[in-house]
Image (tube, rainbow, N blue to C red):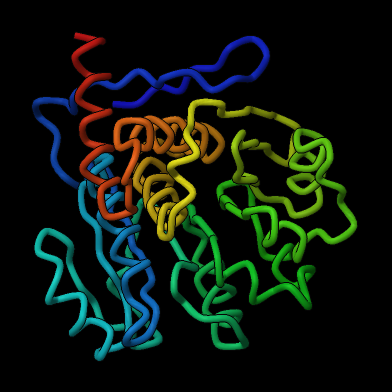
Length: 277
């Protein structure tokens, strides 16, 4: 359904988007899980979950404590809810991707959750609190990472995990961070750089300053998770997600808020589908 495209200099180009197979079913497009923050800190997970569903994940489930799920139930319909019981046996071999971090809270509990879920071996996106929680002990995170895990820091989060890597040259910085961490790293900014541990690099220049609004990063996290659940290649999923996120932001323009972005993502996808047709 998705094919990533890049210019010779690594610039991310609009992805090719085609409809799902006529004989396909929802599990063909992956089951993505978004881990929720606690009660009164659930909005970020909802933004991520809605974006995940809009970009084509076949199923999306928000996982959280019971009190948090009560809040989600007041807002979500097509997205499923599951209580986090510590075992989470419902995460099976049909799982496409996981996303952790938005609204999760900073501290030891988040570190434990991240390491536990990393141990399950599924493709994953780590953002926000899932990164900041390891600021004092980044090596414990890096030891558990793989190339199919995408880290999505902004400049501040990047500095906490990689304090000795200068960001003057962002392409070099993101390559260094990917090589050190063992993960695919996406450094957010006006130009978003993505790199793999092996040195593959791309840069998205298709964006807008209107995306500098609360919750936009949570939408990007969900967009990556949705594409990762379908596509399988973390670098390409991250690259396509940044382009689509930027395109949705451009469509929204002045007055854009993060709540608008999932619907705008659907509009971007429709235009790309029509172009391929």
